[in-house]
Image (cartoon, rainbow, N blue to C red; front, side, top):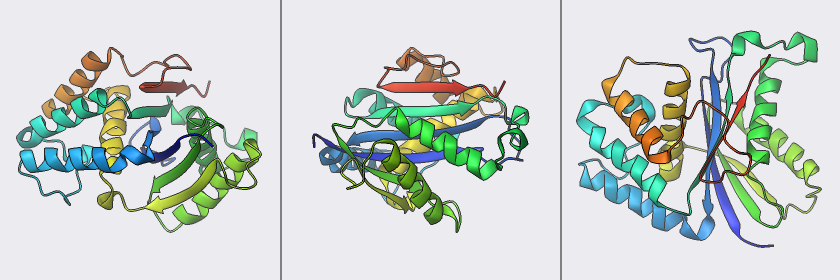
Length: 232
C-alpha cells in the first residue's frame, strides 16, 4: 500500500427534526505521519491565545474574545498542504422522502456519511477513520460504515479501510479543527447572521479559500471539496 492517512469526521444539524433544514457531514484527512506535527501546531496556537492545550475548541464557542484564535485556526488549515477537507451538504432536509426509499433518517444519514467518504478514499492508500461519539449507537454505526466501505472496495483484508473508530473529540486536536470548518460551512449554508464573530470567520474562510462554500466544487478539488446534495 501507499501512504497511510487519518480521516477525522464530524457533522452539523444531522437530526431529522431540529432547527435547521441543512445538514453537513465532513472530514479532514492528513498523512498519519504528519498528525503529531499539526496537532502540536494547534496546541501552540491555543497557548499563544491563552487557551489550555487540552481545552476543547468548537464552532459553538466562537466568540469576540477568542476571534483571533479561530482566525489563526483557519489560516493554519489553509497553509498546511497536508490538510484536506471534504464535506457533503444536504440542502433541504424537509424535502427528504424516506418512505419512498424504504428507509428511516438514520439509514439516510449513514448513506450520506458513506458518500462523503467515498470521494476521499484512494485505493492505493490506506485509512484510519475517526468519527465523533454522538450517542450509544455510534459504535454500531461505525461498524456498518466500515462494512459498506470495505465491500465497495473489495477490501476484505482491511488493507484500505484499516479501521473506523469512534473517538471523543475533546481528546483530538484535528477533530476540533474539523468541527470549526463544518460549523463555518453550516453557518454559511444556513444563511445565519446572528454572530459578528462567526460572520468574520466565515468571511475569512471564503476569501482566503476563494470559494463561496455553498456550491459544489469540482469532483477533483482536494484542498476543499464540497458536494451539495439536493433532495429534489
